[in-house]
Image (cartoon, rainbow, N blue to C red):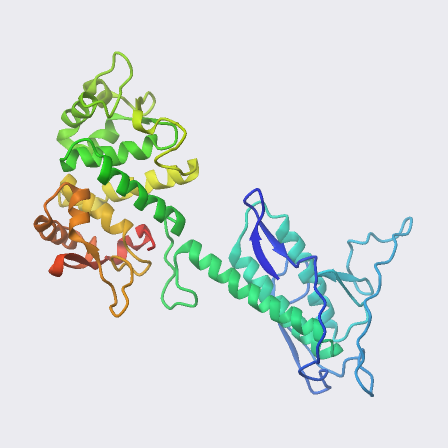
Length: 415
């Protein structure tokens, strides 16, 4: 069994109603009378967690050599009879295209298999996928099919159990990759603002700004970053005076005027920089970035959900409360954005280097993005440490090394 993505972005489950038969010798014999069966979920509607135990010699296994019971065909509906969807005592269940025999023993196994089939089908009807839930279903299936194989001495059931166990592991890895956490890692789970894919898009935006910013100063680069994220999809976006003054403080009007003068930014007819600074949330100013208008190729190619997420992420960084209290300038806040985007899930800066815990990021690239000289990075990194944005920082050897403070780990770009 495996998990994947359908053509509409929804998760599908391969194997919830499809099975594969295999041949092979069983590894173990049937469960004997001294065995005990435990499941983490008791049978019942809704799959609420509980424990159930059953012991006793399975009635499906005779005193002689074990035999493989044949799945019964689904009964035909009878007029006025009980609907086939009703699965009570004496009724058949179905999982992975296998009929669960209504006389399968122990009883707790039969009910668990029946409930699991229902649970997989219910999962497929969910409007949104939940990989943690899916992984738990695969775990339950692996345990149940392993016991079913023991009871019936059927090697194909054991193979199905192995596949379910692999599917559970793969699904957990998918979920960890999406959330940016270590599989089976210790410590609390950090709720990330970005997925790994969105983190990669964030670094793409930063590189675009580094290369294409029309003016060299840090204030202009910060404005270009934030306005590019607003206009990334259609080349246009809405801003308010509160946005602009929050990003650029007292430099907002001058920077906006300069960006219009060089042609990077267009304001609506009859609107100047001062008017844009006066705009309120109920009547924002629509700005246009000509270089981002739709064409044959889009320089920032991502969807509207990612655009909104990246814009919110950058706003969280630039508007960080402790950075504001320290009166961090535009260059320091750009450095905060860069370090967040280029950090691993544990907060360390840069890709993991072979033979070293972390090799950091090059000072030349950082300085170019922030509108600084490489030798100036040390001063601004120290300001980030003082604001608890970075827990530590070192600029020796032409590289910025360090790690994000614990409070900003949710903003990591998940390298």
